[in-house]
Length: 215
Image (spheres, rainbow, N blue to C red):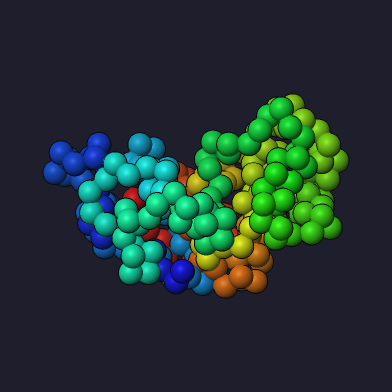
């Protein structure tokens, strides 16, 4: 997959809003593989909604979303399953981890499906992110910032053409934000992938963005 295009897309909840001002809604916007984008938004303007549309979890919109030249409304469950394992990775704002499992088990569940990274690769990320001592800790006992770092590792243990990260550093300090951005950028560069980062204020400031979009 080389590009994601939104053509005149507007969420159903905004359909009656004639004063909507956005670089995305009711516009034509294209995200290209190999480029890095920042989507800046105020709270309540549909940032997480856009991410859910791109990953196919929600369909309550008008307009079209295209992967290359294909309208994603035509995709069935099997196609979406393949896309989510091989083409697009999403780090959810709400993380969607398993609190009853350890940090390592949360990663292993996905990596066993994708078989994308070695244990040594994953352990290196844990160490770089300062949570090497939390590998065997139950996730529900970890801080939210620590959980965000686990969620990033999980997002990276698969092949992808695009990675979409929704508010990935909201609970991280500047140093851990920088390290997380570096790891994500390194992996995206290795795969030649596109990166879409959303933010309502705090963002990965050490990334070089090819485009900044105001939602």
